[in-house]
Image (cartoon, rainbow over all chains, first blue to last red; front, side):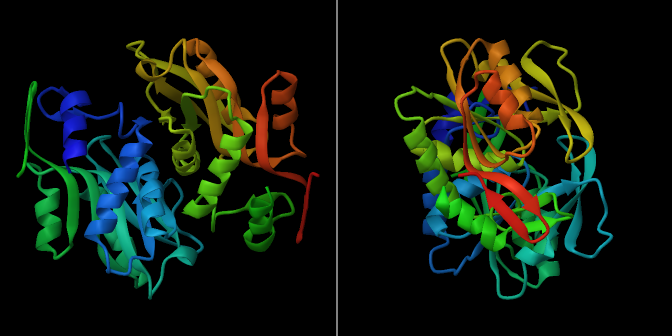
Length: 190
Length: 190
């Protein structure tokens, strides 16, 4: 998606030749008009697939998912990072290892909001190692819902998450795929 | 706002006569069409005030703020709950005591995104004791930006936050104000 790639070139900041900061428009300050265009693109890509729920994870996926959901006319569910284990059996839970934050989170989704018959699109801001997406997919599978695919803003295609998911048969639509990141240099996949 | 009050009556769950759960449409599963109507109502209420930034706090404020921001055509900034103190001086920070979660969080906003000349609307899902809003207002004041007001989905008017903020001279526009909460009974302010 050219609009997103242009914004990354213009406003993205590369740190230590490997970290891409897009916090001025994607995940701290948020450009909601951009999110609207991203939502339209995912709605075009996933047209006719019968998506009836969008699933994301707190915190930085929520804004993108909610604005995109307007284009699909479906509700959003966000997985919560939880310190309390599922005791009452009221939630689906999975474990996500974050390489960015160097920690482990249990994520939970209430069983009230996902189940057989649901057709789920997962949306998130970044795909690198795929840990968050694997946790969300685990939750979709536990619920008996059907995973339609994933909508990602920025995929770091030089990290293994995207390849791993596609090899599992998961449809992944990333709007900007970064092929290479160096100091002051960024290259996108064709 | 009648639409929101009707949804609270229909889908809200009262626990222990004091907790109002609205997680089926407001802050776990999210009804983005409702958020759009809420955004239109705040845009009407705050018309002509020159709002150029919306500020919220992770996680459950983000979806409401982003969808509402489309109606204002302004970016959203969300305050992050942080475990690391501000060492480099790159962020504004404040402390929020959460009665709901029984913990204390430092919240941070990058100095890049708020400053003198900004006219800020704060949006959040709930107002009870006002702790989160006071932290966000503290950050607006530190930045030198102007606080235009607050847009709240559900105010628990029987708790002291709203009164305290209005006595400080802060404009607070709550779309549903709960006057009284008992088991199986909810009463809204006129």
